Image (cartoon, rainbow, N blue to C red):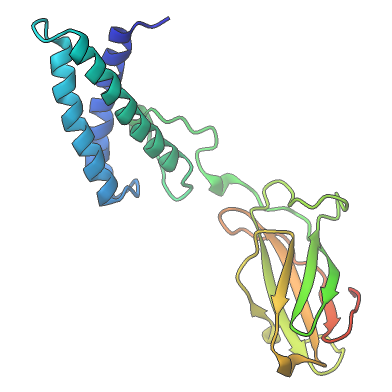
Length: 227
């Protein structure tokens, strides 16, 4: 088991490189100024506690207690920042960055994740006077409620027609993506009696789309089935 002095020495070497790299590359790493200020303040405090801890004349119970508290605070913040950087797909990490920040990415970029090569299927759940509830189903696993692997979000577009004739592509309006496979689409009273057409697709974390589903047609004010 690593003793306290060895753990503190190793963390001190890492922390010094970590802070220096963050201070220089905070903008590229999407680290806020508030986070940088907090990190720098903890580092200054760490240097004082570390100096007292390694100096023979001041090494004792108080300095040991102080360095333990400082270690918990500093390692906690570095772990938080490392996770924030590692999990952000918009940040490209060089070898130097990974070395100084002690970050290893198995998947270096989410952009390498490929979109699904098949479309979802749509099922109507319910219709009220103000909303249509839809279930986006994985056709390969129709009884599962979860999205398939690599599908982070569900893209969505809708159109309205006065007759049950399919709309042209220009009539569709792209809506905000959905995170769940079952969701409601609200509509206003003036749409009652019209036909709503719904098309969905899967999206990766970087927005790459799968093929689009077949349209689901719903007569507003009357429960209908997919076509």
